[in-house]
Picture 1 (spheres, rainbow, N blue to C red):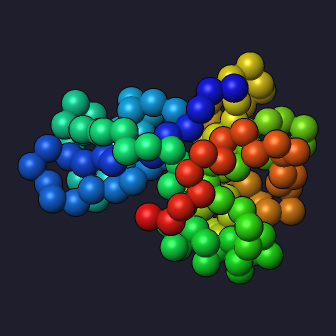
Picture 2: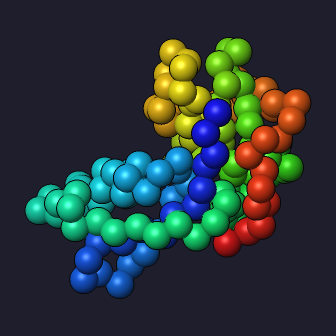
Length: 135
């Protein structure tokens, strides 16, 4: 299992920055690229910049979503399984579900998928819970 880190990501020349939990800066940049591509069609991946800022970060919006979904102690970086497949929570989405990054060597290796809370099983040891702070 690889560790997950928080990366601050931005486009060169833009003041807007976003924190993304990912395994590598390249993965964080690509996630941000996909996020802004619809409203910024001429942006290029090579225009993205990222810097590691530490362990996974949990936003206030994530905490609200976790409370709403009946999982108030869930944090970004927590190890989980989905149908027995191990992964780590890296965020939430507009469906009020959780984004899970699946571990290497699994069926969904490296994919971040939208997972309903009823499908999440907390791992016995919170391997990734290095930074349970709120950004």
